[in-house]
Length: 508
Image (cartoon, rainbow, N blue to C red; front, top):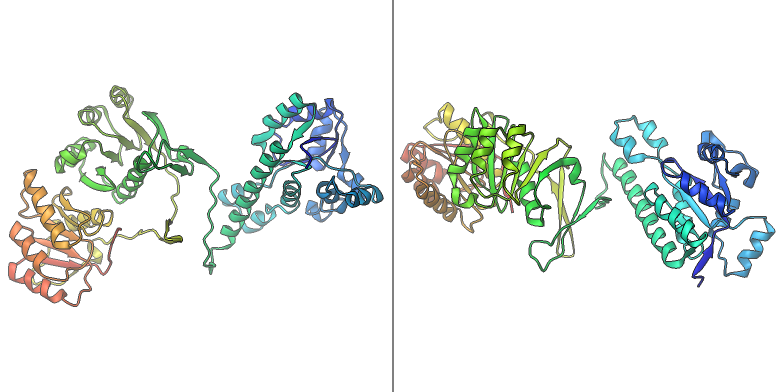
């Protein structure tokens, strides 16, 4: 196997020419013959370097508006020929094909064109054919050929050319090939996803190019990586890097806060809300959110949907928290918040979030649509003699938003746009209710006149009976149990309201 290969001929045809100039100067200095097309050929000539047009190599013009330029045996033969095989060398000599030892080619900006909202015809024209074929051919023949498929690698190649006299090692070529196949596979996935929208094929494909190495996963003995562009979503003002568990909580926080339009603050611990309140002013929202469960709030994730001002920042700074997220902060608030070490302060940017979610499971992956619906008063059907009041309907709507984002089995108590208590992640609904009652009492909340929401139906009437004894006046559940009427009858007996939504919000 050849370990070191001296570059004699290079094919260069790129869309992005940023930082390409140093490579051209090095190739010229080393006396390497350059072949090129179109705009890249002009770019090379303007730098004072000699270049051979691909059309002169192939004796065939670029046709079909540039759709066919390099798809020719004199190009691909020179790339794919195996230098160690006498038969390949003989054929190159027979057909006057130069060995091409370096290929610098990138791809049309397909993903960028889709993201720009361009029309279908424009998107289709950005599906690269010649470029991706050249990249795959050169990467396949990495034992003899260097492939550069991204402008991000221009500097590295320029240094290799300068330091190694135009020669490359097998390890360098293999590394460039690895990068190239990553680019082509990502490109093909993007194209497939574009086509796989109407009548989609039941296949699972994901390709994310950006990644962040995390300190560890859920626990220190587990390795963790985030794949995605965090910088597009958050501007970090202060603090250490987000951990795996931070990211899980931040994801839950973002999903929850997006349910609310009025000034709202939510505090989350282990993905569950331990405090939520909506008020006319963000400071009041913070005070009432913290009152829900100040014990669990310690070390939690705080998220707001309104600007954090100095007064609010002063109050928040009294608590130890892991992460604070808001769409904006006043200058005074930032100075106050920066006074605390190791607090992560994030400014949230508005980006389009995925509508699908998936996770590994057993020997495969499960995927589903995100739960993007929420039932308000218009979707609530009263099934009891007592009708809920207008305020109770508003509170039921508020509670339903929190239920949707809380681990099952869950019960949520709310009153006047404030979470009073919740029972989360219990193996029975009655245990969740009892937990919520105990928590409400421990933090001094009077449940008289409050409402209760459940993520699923009541298979027995015991939850309704316990809720009535605690002072609950209105209950929300999806309905659908064969014993629904037992719970309705208990509500009527206790003179409390019950509404059903027809929609279940399990969260496992």
